[in-house]
Structure formats: structure tokens, C-alpha cells
Amino acid sequence: MLLTSCENPITLETVVHEDGSLDKTIAFEKADSATALSNIFGINPSSGLDSARGWSLKTVAVPIEHNGDQTGTKFNLVFKKHFGSANDANATLDTKVDSLFQVHSSFEKKFRWFYTYIRYTETYRPINRFKMLAASDYFNQEDFQFIARLPNEGQPISKADSIYLQILNTKIYDMYGTMAIFNEEYDILTRLVKKYNPDKKWLDTLRLKRDFIYRHIEKMEGDFNTISIEMADSLKIPLVPREKALADAKELSRGLNSRLSFMSFMKDGKFTNIITMPWTVVKSNADSVSGNKLFWRPPVTKFSFTEYEMYAESRKMNTWVVVASGGFVVLTLAAWLRRKK
Image 1: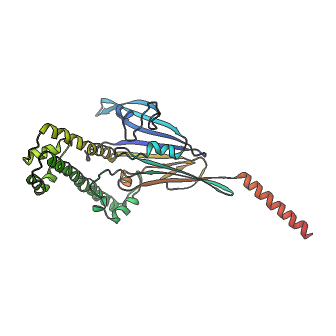
Image 2: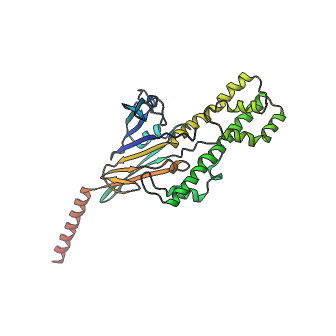
Image 3: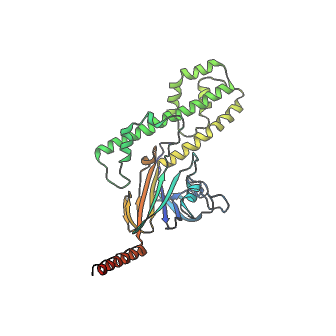
């Protein structure tokens, strides 16, 4: 699941208004029709009180061709919704659900005499959803520093950095990912054995066969629902009653499967983020800027284990303050000259 290769282009766009309200757009390119109701943001176009609902949706069919032959239809899906504040947006897009992508918005407005400043940030939360293996066990400070300075999509990368990135991806998917799945599957198998065959000798068997179980999981592809039962059968561990053990295994694996599905989709994501500020942009960490519109194209590695922040700062001149200050200077100068005479 983690090694499937299929790009998932997604564009997020936010129009920031000076009163703090936001117009959000989320677009999926060449997506399945099911994405309209079930997606990594947990949003849908249904009406209702749920903050995840009430999005407008525009759907455009896109015929897909392979080697010159049309093989099916995908859809470009464009969701739109207005939020009264960044907090309202966070209630929908920054929910702590393991199978959803979390985007945190922040709006700050400051008066600085001659200018008023607006600072708006969007932060992609880490997409790593493994619960039984710390990333710090596999990645050191140099790895995280390398990730932080990685250029975004479309920007050049040196030969040395390209090689380092290949090695890093091997550590992420072939080493860390496999061990993380093993830890969670081993835990599920241990819980099943304790419940359906608590004889101590079978727990000893599990401990002695850890390497065998790891190698089996390393070669696994497809359905993870029954891997614990398959491993029990391979090790000749009877689970009684079998029907209940099988149902329990599927239930215990449900959370892991949903997290694996989310991470697999995100691994192949191609993200473009666009923010439109209300006034002149004076500071940002964007890849490119066009007027008051800013663009970011971060590779998924940027927010695999750490947060990735995109910020923009804009300002407008406070005309009334300039006029008042100019008038004050003129009056002061006039009073001074009159007194000098």
C-alpha cells in the first residue's frame, strides 16, 4: 500500500479578507467520484449543521486515456466555502482525526501607526500516523535539517541532495514504514493470542518468531485485515473460537488500515497552496508571488514528520494617520515660527 505510485494533485486556495474572514477552495484533479463524499479533508457538499458540510461543489468529468484508448472517467472536483474567521476554518480543517489531513489557519491584524499589517499563516500538520514507533528512532537532526531546506516542487536540486533524498526515502518507506507496521501488527497478534489462546507457550512462540513475522509483513501487499490470523495459522497457534477471533482481528485492524490508506494517498499527493492577501505583500516564504497572490508547492516530505508553515504579511497605509500627522507637523512648525518672530 505504501509503495503504490499514483499522483494525487490537490490545490488549496484561500482568499484572505481584511476583516479576518476566509474564502476556501479545495480542488482535486482526476479524482474518483467517491472523493466528493469521502476524502482526506472530511468535507462534503451536504447541507446541515456539521461544519464539515455545506461546501459548494463543482464537478467536471475528465476522460482518462491509456495508450490512446479511453479507459474510464475521472473528475475534477472543486469545493468552496466561506468562513467567518480562521477559528471557524480550523473547526473544519484542523480536526484531530487520524485519517484526515489537518490544515491550521491563523489570522493576525496589527495597527502600527502609519501602516496596518495583516499576517496570515497556514500550517500543514505532520501526516505520519504511526503510533508505536517514534520517528526519532530512525531520523536524526541532520535528516530533519535536510528536509527543512529541501526545495519545493519545480525548483532545482543538486546531485548530492538528490542522492541523499533517495536514501532518505528508503529510510522512510522501506525501513521506518515497515517496522512501524510490524510493531502495530505484532501488537494486534499478541492481543488476539492473549484473548483466544492465553497459554503462555504461545506468547513465547511469538517472541521467538519476531523475525519471521517481520519478514512476512515486509512482503505483504493488499489486505491487512487478516494478516494477524494468517500469521497465527503460519505459527500453528490455534485461536478459539476462530470466527470470533477473525471478527476481532478485523476490528482491531480497522484503525491501522484507515491510517495506512490515508498515508498511502498522501505519499503520492502533489500539493499546490495559493493564498491571496487583501493588501500589498511585504513579507512571505512563498515559492513565487504575483501581485498579492502567493504560491507554494511543497513536497510531501516537508510535512511527513514535522509541521510545514506558509506565511504571508501584507500592509496598507493608514491615510487618516498620515494626514493627521502631517497636519500636526504643519501646525507645530507654524506655531514655532510665530513664536520665533
